[in-house]
Length: 419
Ligand SMILES: Cc1cc2nc3c(=O)[nH]c(=O)nc-3n(C[C@H](O)[C@H](O)[C@H](O)COP(=O)(O)OP(=O)(O)OC[C@H]3O[C@@H](n4cnc5c(N)ncnc54)[C@H](O)[C@@H]3O)c2cc1C
Image (cartoon, rainbow, N blue to C red):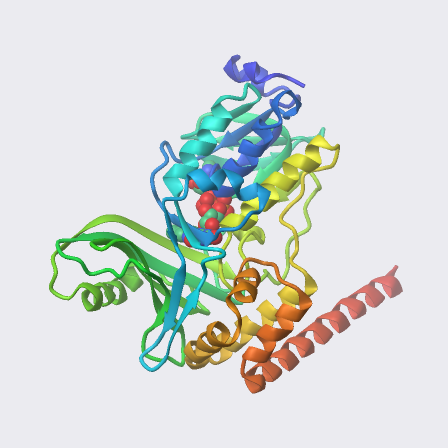
């Protein structure tokens, strides 16, 4: 194992068939930094790790929210959370439900606070190196089965690759739906925000093509984040969301003058990709494109923390690094059916979410939204939802599973005959 010192040697040295690092993390965003931070915490047991990140500097580019709980992997977040709410609302023109979440407040963690914290932990380790301003142009496997990474200015070799990049441009397949959103944090000259609650979903007019709603995080009576979100079969660009966002801001603040403090935009895949390409064990894909986000909601921050902490713990116990953990069969099935209903009947989404929030007790609901809950709670959630569309979607999902299984078996049988 060559130490990181070799990075400073002439280029010829770094091209030797030896690894610069045990692990190279491609992309230092949420997943990359979370894993690196956990590895740094292993002290002298930490593997030599390089993180290659394209951006030169971290900015407050996103607002991470989640339902706060006592999960050990989230303990470090307590001090970074800047806002907590104990009520959340789901509404449309005709419907409104407010749910109390005092037990697990909805918490806001500004991304810059996380980046600063993680970079601080990493910088105190002599085994982990974060290289910002390193845009990766190619990755190839070498003869000795280590990996070669080319950035715009350097070449690195590593034994194991953790790839967090959301590589391909968002395309429709293989995910079931896309969650596209665009928001602004604004400061108004008069009070316009109700600080007592978060608007999780304020649905716009019912639409047969897409589900569209506003998300509002009030951080003071004059200040808050207003975001427009679309669930649709095609990703929607920031430019396409502009007019919806402008209309939404206008309807919220009326004629009160405001200034924009921050903007954020995202396109998140919803649903599991239909097929994940088989890759060598030493090349592990993680992050948004590889199952980091909960399929039905797009929430990923807590899941990433859980994965990163478990990976580092596993490594210290002699296990291999791994990708994100699969949800339980029950959660996957429920998410699948839920997404299918929203995809096929977007105009029903307001009523569905209204039923979900109105008829389920808040503890069970939050545990379900945060990837947990018991079978009994899952059944209570299923009972809260209208049976017919879910039955139809369930049957369609079952049909698809059977067809996929038949296709897989027939391909295997054909393979056996040929051999
Ligand atoms: C605006 C926004 C708000 C969100 N809000 C929430 C929320 O409230 N709650 C929640 O749970 N989840 C939320 N998410 C979803 C999820 O938590 C985030 O997207 C999270 O950042 C995903 O982590 P990641 O590591 O997969 O991707 P990223 O954090 O985007 O990290 C990928 C990194 O790879 C780098 N990279 C890409 N290509 C290259 C290259 N060629 N060379 C070098 N580096 C490269 C990028 O610069 C980036 O830093 C939000 C997402 C967005 C976009």
